Image 1 (cartoon, rainbow over the protein chains, first blue to last red):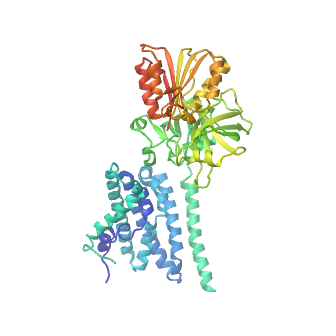
Image 2: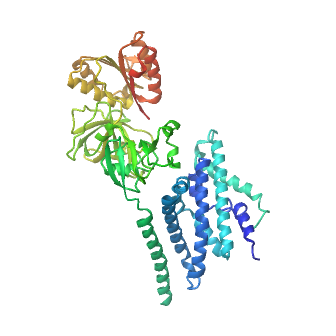
Length: 195
Length: 368
């Protein structure tokens, strides 16, 4: 069944959320979720890079790797493209759009090694998406990632003064919260499905 | 055979294209050219654009305090940048107070030089240099406090005021992957320009203190820079002095005392030194010797946790001594030099001010 790109968009935000359904991109998710403002900045940067790289990687895969039967190279090629894309984007916005750079530029280097980015590129190959579907999948996954990290940051700000047991402070309680958030998001699973 | 060839070609093609793109971008987009930094409306530096202010300054041998090596995690490298810095970055926010932000104070390791800039740096920082040295002496003063002597081996001399501090570098060692700097007061007199003494306590999970206590031994090479700090002896005054310290707070006061002894500065000095138990006291002999040599100096140790029978000196906390020995007198013309933990300094300052000392005559160096 050919999926409607809008369905993919909605599903990748809520039901197939990169963090809460796939547990991808956990490193920066835990590290940068202390304040809502910063996590929103990182979320924006992730969305931007996801959108760009999913399209580029789709094109490289369909028009370069597939015709020559080099599908097995996708891991290495995708990582190279993502790294180069991030580097280029960082340089360009730092020079020409300083205001944008001040709000999200500093997060860009973090994103190169964010596995959610690679995950999205790989998923769209595995699931045989078209260009348009890849685009909405990229955007949706980014928004979903942002939604999750901002929500987590909000919760972490709230529990700052809570008496968390010593052994659970920091990453421990964050992982538990993430698990609970994932459970909560299962409640949305009837909305749209792409898996 | 063809498969291998196409694989290699495709991969090479993709990476080369990207590499060329990035190189071009680097050459044309990220090239900010040479920029000018004007410091204190006086000094002009021409630096390569695109790097951080901190590294631009280090390149010109100006050392701003920085403990983390420019990673934006210590918040020490603050300086006032009045022009050309752009808006405050998210990475700076956690280290800048609202007051800092209103006064154009920035973290110099995070702000890049993209335009001509104007900034202000305290004059004394121009005196800061980086030194290489060798540990010539290392001794345990108590089970948690070490006395180090570092001889400068690169031919330079250190010029500092008694009471100032230096930053010691801990290189990566097992358990710590990165270079870090931490601040330690110099415990020796400024007249000894070829070597410095440091008194370093072991802080649980402290990166540099662990390095000093567990990995550093006599004969090892070390790197430090300095001097820094605005806690030092006020030489323009001849009023009475009260010194109060606990633990490694001994260091800057020892420097001041030896300096006063060498210069034959004649002031009345009372030094209250707090510790928990008799075995936590150190350098008592040395202080007793200074009592004989210095004009009017008394060293009064006080113990807070001494068991009965093992101590016949003062007991309690340093604030108790302040209350006991200082007479109630308004408008006291004396100075106080405090050094130690923040709670000790806050309570001692309060006690001194209640005894009539002027707030602005209470100088302190908080160790945190």
